[in-house]
Amino acid sequence: MVQKGKTLAGISRYVRKSPKWYYFVLPVVLIFLIDYIILGNFPALSIISIMPFILLLIIDFGSIRFTNKKFNNNRIMYLDFVSLCLATLFFWIGILLNPIISMPYYYILALAIAFPAFLRFLVLYIYYPSSMFTALLLSMNYTFSYIIIALVFYNINHIATRFIVPLIAATVIYVMFSYMFLLFTTIGFTKKYKSRPSELIDFFLNRDNDGAIGEKFFSHVYNKKKQIPVVTTNIKKRNEDLVTLVFPYVHPGPFGNLCTSNLPIKISSELGMDNIMVFHTATTNSNNCSGKDDIKKIAASVKHSLEKMKYSDFVSDFVKFHVDGYDVSLQKFGNSGISAVIPYQKSFDDISLSAGLKVMKALIKNGAENFALLDAQNSFTRDADELDNCDMIINPLIKEFRSTDSKYPAFIGYARSYEKIEGLAPMGIQVLVLKINDYYNAIVLTDSNNISRDIIKMARAGSDKRVKNMDIYTTDNHVVNVGELDINPLGMHCDPGPVAELINNTVLKAIENSGPATIGTHTEYINVTMGEENAFHNLMETVLLSIRKAKYSIAFVLIISMFISVLSFRYIVFHL
Image 1 (cartoon, rainbow, N blue to C red):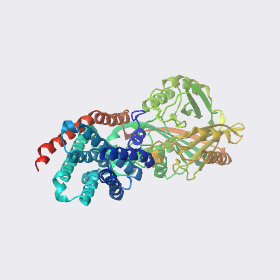
Image 2: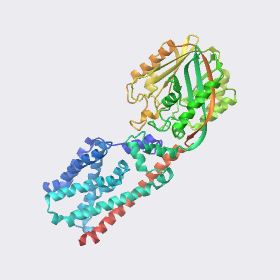
Image 3: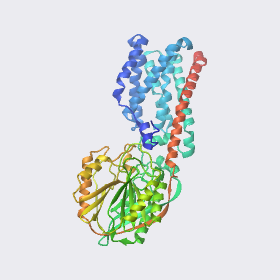
Image 4: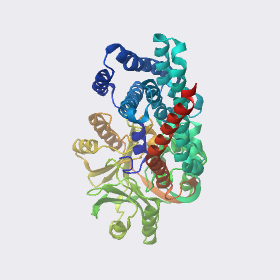
């Protein structure tokens, strides 16, 4: 069901899915067999069914693949299979109803052959949003294949008015009604987002992750001014910056390099700093920002914080506790702290900005100098809902914050590693270790869009004996989704073993690099351009509304287009 989860990934899977070609072989053979029974001889079967379908495959593979390389072979074969099914089903029904409609078989055949043009135009218009003429011509390829076969085997003087003219007339009628159907079902989307849905879906399908179409569309989704906090924690070792932790209340999406997707490397580049960890805070896809100006503002706020922050020599031990089906962690740096919410018995995907800010304000009101709430994004569950209420963790977290002292001398290490692994973005694996007495707590940050549980289990099982606690978070970076335009958690398309090994090797490097440190935290508030709180939900609702309109109106439009095609035959073509 496309509605489940109401995510871009769900829409993407819905519009991109194509079965493999070998699933069509048996149905095609069965169709030809039934046609043979109806037609009564093999030559007629060859001319009416087999050769036009083979020629359609050849024409489509030549024309569609030449003009749009992203329309892959599976899609072409699926489109042609559906075209064959529609034409055949129409022909069979026409034969059965012929005693009622009283039309010659060649007119019924012409109507049947033209019928797939309705669906073909709907599909191809998406892939050719800037060239409706190309989509129109390609949608008529089944018609062209029949015309070619007819001209090879019959005298044009005999078939021009009896077959070719009605075939072209019916095809044009179906394409015209297909276009009207598109306009009707998408008018609400076009009006609201100032973009044609065909352009947007083509953007998804063709993976144009940096294109003007995507920039234009998302500028209408993420267009509200919003004040958000950027919490910065800086760690110094021997009076030199060891690593800077950044907690921007901005979501790292939607995908590719659009908007604030690939946020960690963008902030790193803007600051000119490699030793920076950009965490995923309590934000959703509604909190993606519009573009480069927002990145510059985030980077500027980090610089301002580095100039203003006061440093402490002490940190707390790592604390984790359960609340209402969730794990909640706490790490204090002086009198500031960070806390991550982690799925335990209940799953979720993203925490709403309003819920996160409410927790943050409650902690500051109750004694924290600075505080950041993280969404760990470390327990991948497909189609999980957003967590829009964190009230249940506020009082327990305040209690833990007050009872947890920063009494341990800051002895901290940092390391970063990168290998080319599917699902791992440019910042790679980053590790912060804090020594508490004779053991280490490790905070691991993978630059990925979530992570599989297998990797986490393997990394913890293979960790150094000096590591008492290891929490693995992700940046939720949506840049890794662009190849699939779907959820792509680290571990889904790669062997988890090497990733777990890379994590543990990076932990060892951080331990080896550890030493006495000082740590400071400061919060700046900036104005950015992002979506309103329900922007992404509203987008999904608009898309789904268009789908529902299509669902309930397509039967009516098809019936009207068929009725007009039949009338055109009776009162126009019959008199030629």
